[in-house]
Length: 85
Image (tube, rainbow, N blue to C red; front, side):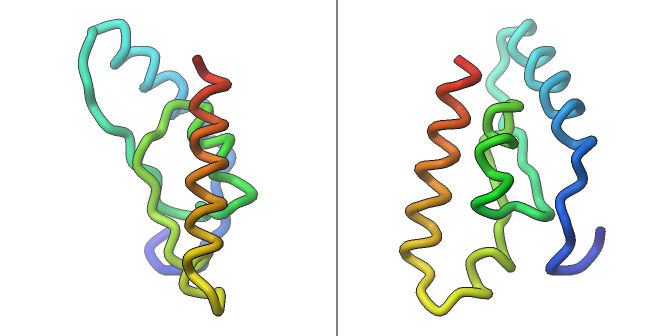
């Protein structure tokens, strides 16, 4: 943690899920942002866990074409959100 290009910390998923459940139980609308290791490989699982704000620096800026990566990540995030229900 603390600089770009970090790998995703898997334990974040359980913590995000618990936090989202608590927020929903309280009837609140609070965004959950995840910053670190967000890529096409992780964004769906993170969205399914309950996050709805994503920081994906290296996954986007490390590519020649930003738009296709952003479109793919948006699609994967929506699919993850739909799985959560």
